[in-house]
Length: 584
Image 1 (cartoon, helix red, strand yellow):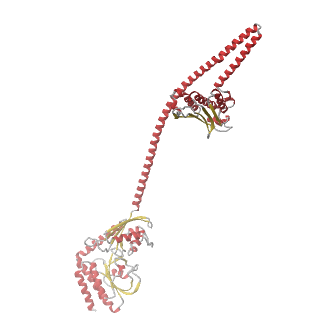
Image 2 (cartoon, one colour; image 1 turned 60 degrees about the horizontal axis):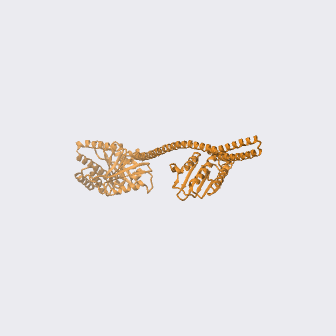
Image 3 (cartoon, rainbow, N blue to C red; image 1 turned 60 degrees about the vertical axis):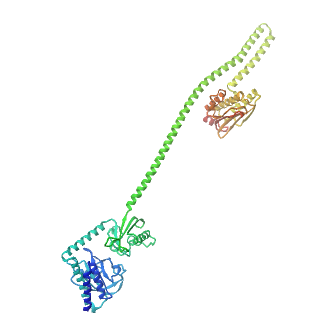
């Protein structure tokens, strides 16, 4: 027994000579205990000041789940009892648990626990836990070995740091650790550390503010499980992206990724960085990986809103630009339209002035013609009749009844001729058939009378409308237009045949006069004819047609005759008089 204890002391002494830190010395001491007592395990826990949690910082045969894992005092009663009475080694019965359990593991069998606090001038920060199978014969030796080991570790730690400075050193370390923990806990990001198995060994309290569970419960789990509790989806985007990022750390010291997480409803930015070794270079292969998980939802939301706003502004600018372009185009079109309207108005004014002048001239010419006709025919005939009646009166006084009767008979014949001449003048001024029957019948009569005068020109008529189809107020204009067209054919065309047609086409009265005469060089708008003296008849024809609401079109070519087409809007049907009157 003494030999084994001496061997243990020897190993501890050698460890005190070579170890430079308490954790390194604790590692060697735990290994010496396990070597002295096969089948046992030894662990040194470091207490977190002012907290009821400890972490395994050294050991031999220590389960992997205990490495850097936070343990509550109530989970291991022996540790709590040893800290309450640091002057003795606590010995209690225990049960060993599996290394992969959630807390202290599944039960494997009874064990004997020896637990003692490492001596410290201030509050003990380290606790030695030794577990071995029950053996009453060796309990005393084991207790002595644990007592010796814990005191050797305490003495070596005091020697290493110096008794006078140890209290201040540990206090400074404690305060620095608390400040760093408070600083990390105050960060809005989830910050922590992963071990080589990609398990969380440290994490700040932002995890709890994110409502993802407690810090204690997250230790020992992978980062995906911590951020996605109860997620069993193997194709989870966060799981796959995190695994790929961790795989990259085998080739570089840091990496990061960002994704929109539908499970959390957040936009996350994850940064991973390999912990450095004492020289400052990244440890390869890595043992620890620091992670920072940031909630960038607000930032991305603002970016998306800005992008949407920019797109909206661009769209509005494009729409406004299009509206301004359309408005400018409309203004330009309006300027052109008004310019054309002004030019048309000036042209119409000039034409109106010319028309008024021509109307006055036409009236005077018509009066002169009528006066000349009355003087030449009716006046002379009446003078001859007057002379004949006076002669008959003289013969009657002379009792020459037979001669008087002959003179009276000659006067009667002259009166008959005067009546016919007056009827002809009246027909020229306004045909009676136009009032008695209508425009269609009047045009037919006009064509017959015209052919009686111009027998050398054949005339074909195709009147497919009834008198009732033409409004009374339009009849005179239709009649005069056909009359003027036929007179133009007789005077200027040199034609052998002329065709006159009247028909209704979709609510439009169409009148055409076509000859096979010499024609002339023009096609389209007859306004081009206004300055040609030989074609003034067509000018008057256009003015009469347009003044009555119609349209006049002339097409001709040298040697190919002339076609005059006149159109007026009407309503077809025998009961259309009132409607036609409204239209015209």
